[in-house]
Length: 341
Ligand SMILES: N[C@@H](CCC(=O)N[C@@H](CS)C(=O)NCC(=O)O)C(=O)O
Image 1 (cartoon, rainbow, N blue to C red):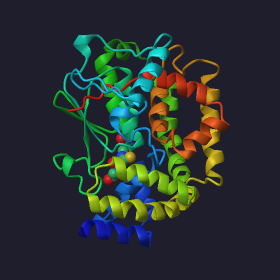
Image 2: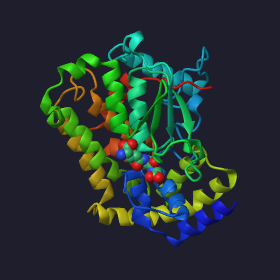
Image 3: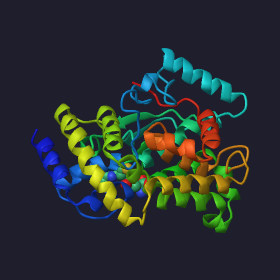
Image 4: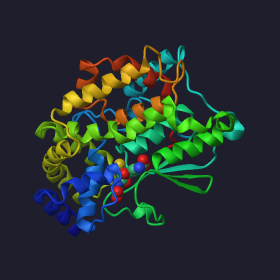
C-alpha cells in the first residue's frame, strides 16, 4: 500500500522523468526507491502494447501470436487460439521455424521478464523462432523480488541449464553460439560490422527509442498502454489501480521529455520513418537474412511485437510498407514455445 502511494505520488509529481525512461533504455543513473518505482512503470512504457478493450495478449491462452504455448500436452483452445493456429498453419507452408537439432536445444530455460519489455520480447522472438521451450517468471517491476537472487537488476535475465545470462543482445549471442556452433566458427573477424549486426545495433540504439513517445503520445494512447501494462504485468492490486491512471498521466509527460531527448519532433513521423528505413534495408528480400530471418529480423520483430496491436502499431502498419514483412515474421516465428506451468 505504501509502495503504491509512493508510486502514485512520484508519478503525479512527474519525478525524474528522463531517468525513469532510461530505465528501459539502459541508463546507469542511480535512483532511489521511488524513482525505481516510476522507472519500472516507465520500462513498460518503452514497449508495452495492447488494445485497451481486447488486448491481443491479454490472456496468454487466447492471444495472437502467443497462443499455443507449450503446456505439457495441453494445446490452447478457443476461438482466438484457433485463429492463431490457422494463421500459423497457413504461413507454415511457406515459412517455418528453425528448430536446432535436439541435442543442442537447451533443456531448462527460464526467462525473468516484464511482459511488455522490448528487450525481453527480442529474447522471446529468438526462443519462439528456434522453438526452444522456456518458462517465464514475470517480475514485479516495483519490488523485483523475483530477481532478488541476481546482482543484475534489469530484465531480461535468462537462466539456461543453470547458467545465468543478462542483456538481451548478449543472451541472444550466447544462445546462438550454443545452437549454431558452426556459425560461430564460420564468422569473420569483422562480423561486428556486417549487415546483421549493424541492424541489430540500430534496433537497440534507435528503434527502441521510438516506442515510448508513440505509445504515450496522447491521453487515450497513454491509457491504452497502461491498461495493458497493469493488466498483464506482475502488480499487486493496489499497484495496479495506482499505476494505471497515475502512470498514464505521468508517462504522457514523460513522452514529451523523451521527444526532446531523442530530437523527435513528430513521434509518428519518426516511427514511420524507422519502419520505412527497415523496409529499405530489406531491399526486396523476404527477410534481411534472405529466405529466412536472421538475428536482426528477430530483433526488429521482437521490439515491435508489443506495440503492433496498439494504436501506434496499427498506424505504423497502415501508413508504411512494413506490414508484409511483419506478417511474414508472425508466420515464421509462429506460436510461442513458452511452457505454461
Ligand atoms: N541493454 C539491456 C537493457 C535492459 C533494460 O533496460 N531493461 C529494462 C526493462 S525494458 C529494465 O529492466 N529496467 C529496469 C531497471 O533499469 O531497473 C538489454 O538489452 O537487455
